[in-house]
Length: 171
Length: 171
DNA sequence: CAGCCTTGGTTCAAATCTGAAGCAAACCTA
DNA sequence: TAGGTTTGCTTCAGATTTGAACCAAGGCTG
Image (tube, rainbow over all chains, first blue to last red; front, side, top):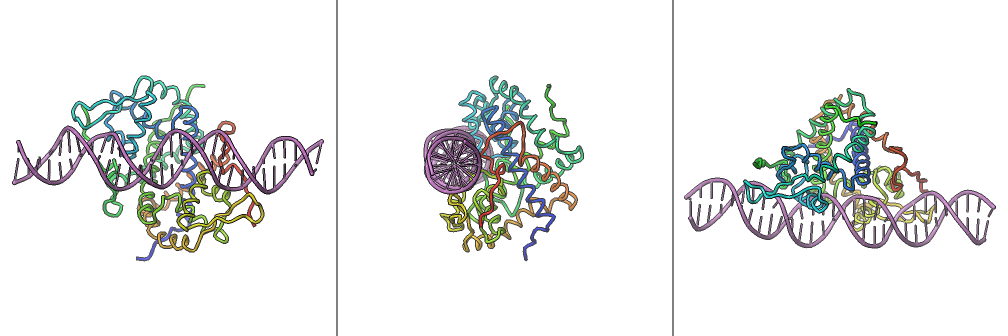
């Protein structure tokens, strides 16, 4: 089959998408590195944990929610643990498993830095969009993410994609 | 001033955005690593060069178009040069400057891998969106990017942001 | 033109990320 | 319950990225 190249509308959208995502991620990384001493992804891990019951999650579960590989998560948590923001615990129900738990200090860092982060997200994104656009963005992104979560893109790729797994709740 | 937290609409949009961008970038990286032996960003560098007059660009210019730092570009180009896909040339008009030029081999790789890449972008993104959504996405992303390009986010941050610079065309 | 600031790019050291491999526990199934 | 597979997570080695430091060439000013 001959390639269906992008239309010029699609090309413009694609270029804008690449620019926006690169610039925004960069902005957030810098802001958080500055104010919280960690990249955006690490902050989002803390945020994820803070919302979980007991402020703790199984590694695989956290990886899945964060859309990152288990390998990447292992390193990230190791760093956060070294900083005392997260503690690793043994999963009582599965001796193989480990649980990442937000420490009080981690929660404190989160509470201290959240306002600045939200402010940056607002200034970079939401304050520039109309309410309708916020809705459109959600719809669009949900659709994209939905298609990629268990994405049988072209017949089963790598297996280390955490969001391709199921994890049993640890309790 | 008290923090203006995200509304629940904004929160949903933000979460969807993070999920979509992480998953999509991951998908593209894997696809291109597989088919072209390089991450998505490197591919986009080649693509950028291929569209430039003479298939060559000043380093700073390329960095700016690609929305990455000069440092990052230096390493990326070094790798691409090692693979023979790009050649560094001296800028005739400025002895400090260097120019990245797409080689024939680089162009060949691009032509060979472009169809698969486009197909992945389609499957992941455009084939899932309505034409209106494509338009909305462009509008939204253009707005985001526009706000961050020379973004005086909160009074002048780091200076190594290439898109904060001007570069003179080399020729 | 000397002195000084800016610009274009690279280099350094350290942090992060990646995919494959490894290891142990859990889960079958005969 | 032994044997084989899967699951959960870490470890390894190498690639990539980061921000600061560095260096040489350009530009400007007195």
